[in-house]
Image (cartoon, rainbow, N blue to C red; front, side, top):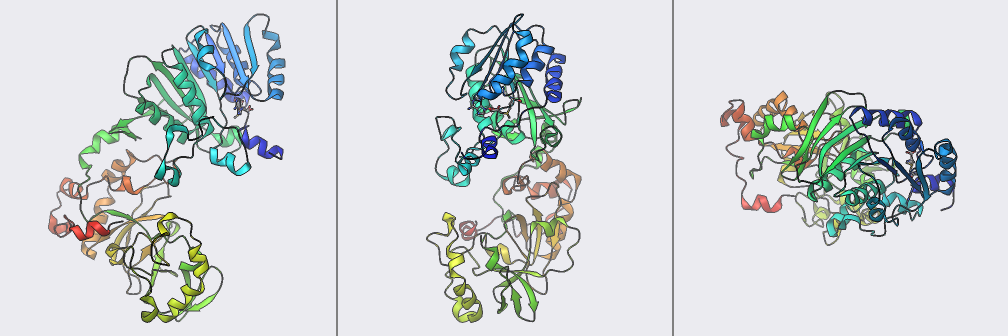
Length: 505
Ligand SMILES: C[S@@+](CC[C@H](N)C(=O)[O-])C[C@H]1O[C@@H](n2cnc3c(N)ncnc32)[C@H](O)[C@@H]1O
């Protein structure tokens, strides 16, 4: 740990401004939360403790802990006017080694745990050489594939809040803590799986730009623990003063973003195996070489600014997320090199069919071989993923996984060739223009927007996922709107044959 900036990152050191801590304490008071003890486990400069002192006359005992000696000195000075009248302890402690269970035994209830634990991930710590981690490194025991896909990455605040909730089991206790909204959802998913019950569960979104000058979706997570088991129902508010909430809850293990819309449209849910499935665009992990712009005639330019002459056999017009999000698509000038027509297809056949293309990928062998993802191991050289018959159908309906709206695009062939997508997009491959237009009309209805809004968490990095898109049964949707098979052209696509299932990615 060399510099002050890294130190700030390692210890997630964004102190909460008193304006916000006051608002939060006031809100809790207005909700009839009258604690007898208050704990601030990462109290920093003590804004939460001071606001709690000003707000809750019911409190008999305060405990503030933090790892930073300097901050504790600040806090001790700030609270000195109150220490004669009140039982306040400010202790230097590392959250991860402190005996919370013993501490809680002696505290008058109800207990309120309040604060703002550090906003940093374990991989963020790794990149700056930080060591501020819980002892159990593989927190929540993520293994194998999860570790590869990044699920083993967690926020320090996630481990602090879950550790606190586990210690609070069996106590009459509230927890009100600021964290990223993605972290709040992970904590509630953990609580659902591990039977932590709450009779009050609220998420208030907060303006992190205004209070912390950072662009992160953050919230106040507020719960009251309950001894008897009860399913989690969480009220979600747009901000601390919002009076209206959206109810979120767990259904079949999934955290549903909008329970009301879920109940309204759950009859359209379907996971039947049809060939009309949403697919991811092509994954190649080498845009520098695989994505090209047309220069003139059969000359193309890659991102290294090299001009190359290529046959058009393996080149397809391509669209990215940003193309799908921006208005009508009139012209396409980007092309993708698609060296395989199905996953695992030998690539050496390119040599005879398209010698210039073969020479180009051979010349860039090093960059392509450098792709680190395990999926490329034990597969033919220059392999790509997310490719199959469905890639080459002329008519498709596509959507970006990154954008914050449910906006489908009808995409037909361009210059006589099917359009392909990169792996930030999802698409439905249709059998004909007629079928594509019919399904596009169905997908453009408010019913579909509402159906998906039940499942989508808009603050997620990639809010729209393949899993969510495939939850909607297009057959049931067509039935709902009284459209028959002739209209949608479904009869040929209802059941996929075994071969197709085998090649599905
Ligand atoms: C986001 S700041 C919040 C400070 C304070 N809670 C507030 O709201 O203003 C996080 C605090 O966590 C403290 N911290 C970081 N790692 C800690 C650890 N392992 N144990 C205890 N405190 C820690 C930092 O020193 C810092 O003061």
